[in-house]
Length: 294
Ligand SMILES: Nc1ncnc2c1ncn2[C@@H]1O[C@H](COP(=O)(O)OP(=O)(O)O)[C@@H](O)[C@H]1O
Ligand SMILES: [Mg+2]
Image 1 (cartoon, rainbow, N blue to C red):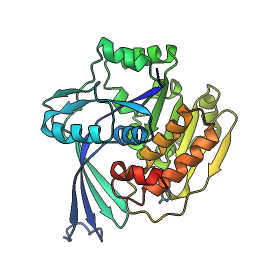
Image 2: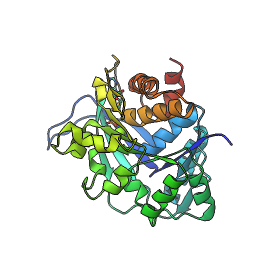
Image 3: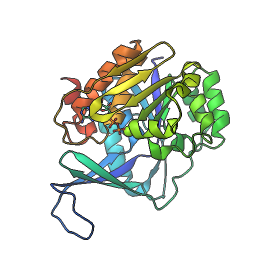
Image 4: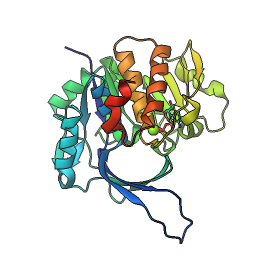
């Protein structure tokens, strides 16, 4: 059977607004709406993986309020949604305000995400995946997740976490998740919170366990650490119009290259290149085909 990836995370609806200025508090400004786009970080990654030809499942509970829109998008991107369930919770929404290529995201966070219940079929599929891609708050939605993570590790499933600063509760409290991962992919703020003023050598304890640590640094490219490799890769010169999803695209390309056997450096360079190009388009999922052909 071909190698596949399961991406776990909340599929959300992004309401995208563009404005040429960011107004002061109390001011008003004209803006344009790009409409509702199906998004969510693990979902963006799943879409790019599928578009790169990697068999990818999405695992989430989908709200009935936006079910049709979400399923159309899953189908369009060829993401397998047979692991998803449906219920009547309100779909998570974000409002993204894009000002000349950089953006501010408001996550409308007024309810809890539904728990993810694993039946035998889902467990079986997860246990046979090459990679499980998610972030720490999302994997915590799985009941008894710590034992399940141990099951995954015993089955040689590689767990990959995308880590931004808001996803770390406290490094100490989330230690179990960090130390049982295969790849920790931080953005700069996430890495800063992880390091928490400690010396860089602090990460050696993870590298010595065989964990790969990636730090993405926006226009400044990225950095990768393994037990034997430490490499900084500069950013590609691009003209960004929308940086939303750059990190998600980066992680997808890295995994798509890894799954076919490329080494870390080859994979990271391609991730850095494609992620940069993806910022030149609005809404990564819609344009990834074009980006991949560049
Ligand atoms: N302005 C940019 N110019 C060139 N590359 C970029 C730019 N923004 C993002 N990228 C690429 O996307 C990757 C992820 O972006 P980053 O902003 O670090 O992550 P996130 O979107 O998760 O915060 C970077 O490592 C880089 O490869
Ligand atoms: Mg990110």
